[in-house]
Image (cartoon, rainbow, N blue to C red):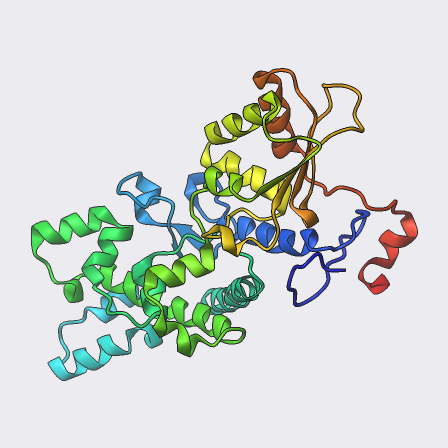
Amino acid sequence: GHGGQKRAFKVKLIGEGVNDYSGPYREIFTDAISDINETGSLDASTLGILDPSPNGSVGVGESRNLKVFASCVSSEYGEFLTDASIMEEERLIRNHFSSHLVPRNERVRDLEDSLSFLGKLVSTAVRHGIPVDLSLPLGTVWKRLSEEDVNDLETFQEIDLLTFNRLQISKDSLADDNSTTEFLACQQHFFNAFADGLSSVLPVEVFSIFTAFELRDYFCGNQEIDVELLRSVVDYEGYDGDEEVIQYFWEVLREFTTEEKKLFLQFVWARSRLPLKASDFEAPFKIQKDTKSASYEALPSASTCFFSLSLPEYTSREMLRKKLLFAIKNVKTMETDFSTNDVEVEEGWRGL
């Protein structure tokens, strides 16, 4: 009874009468990645694991959604990396091993452990066909995993356009710049912890057969929610696909923002990204006619285990949009499979 979902363990949501036919399993990965991506005031990472890229923080460049590994190293480290008083041979050795020279205080060790666990979490999800909503840079992550050559200047163009422009204008060497040298060394250091976590689940030694773009897409799926791709794998039950309410539904879904589309996908499938192509779907997306609700005021409902949406036959596009938006933004619990009681809550995971 796993709903066709490959899995490493079974999920029991205490206090919710839900059988894990795959929806709860996908939900924990989606929720965990969402928590890691969450930012609070001043664009600071809530959990202190991934930070918005400099481009995202100041609102410049193209890839503003990228995240970088959180930095928790003192400025003295950057000064150490750019100390010009040492001999050239010593400088080359220092720069080569710079990521291993990061001062390891308690905060650094905690972040290493967190990123190692993130690597395990991500690789477990991907191994079981669950793309993760993790926007990491090509230069500091995916090219390193695929063993491609990394151009540090291009990396800054990707994640920190202001620094890239400054270096272009001043003609300064990256090796002589405190802040850039420190940033790259720290990113490499924490990448090592992330890759170590990945290697405990997936054979990272074969990643070099992929390009960085292929590897990113394999892990993360479609960064944009392709409504036409979703429509190409739909099955209807109770509808034939030509009804006005069905046309309303697809029109409204196309008009949703990217975040609203992610909420919708999580509502119906407990994941926030689609596979890359139709053949990667393990099951069709089902739209079922809601025959239980007598009123058109009823909300749509979903079964994440079976990738299905129960849709009342709304009489207007505006009504459908209003009800669907309310459902995806406010319904945070899964469809109840059975009634829970105090004994089940007290028993918790021991009841598995």
